[in-house]
Length: 136
Image (cartoon, rainbow, N blue to C red; front, side, top):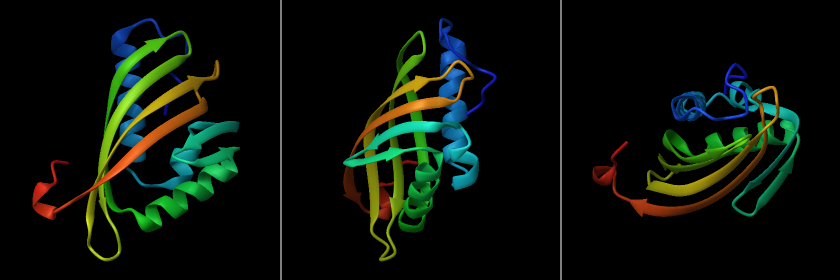
């Protein structure tokens, strides 16, 4: 996520661009690059896991992409105000047994003045799919 687009978010086009930057970054599946988009003291809730700090996020992302293979993500801006955004997303991935999943969710984001994300709340549900049902 680029720190060049920083709050307050008042322009729909810039807010949507911030979401696209996040999508592009996560689709690299490079934990170091993704973690760098978050503040050093970031706070996360991802499903039932609670993380504090960029180092914890980095470890989480390494575990995530070791398990979620061929991950492909699509994000969409849902709303924004001041230094916060709501985003809906879906992503597809398969496990090491070849079972494909589509994961659906919503995120609430809060940004520091720098444009780095300082808080992320994610609720996610997984649906087992066949490879032929993939859309991403």
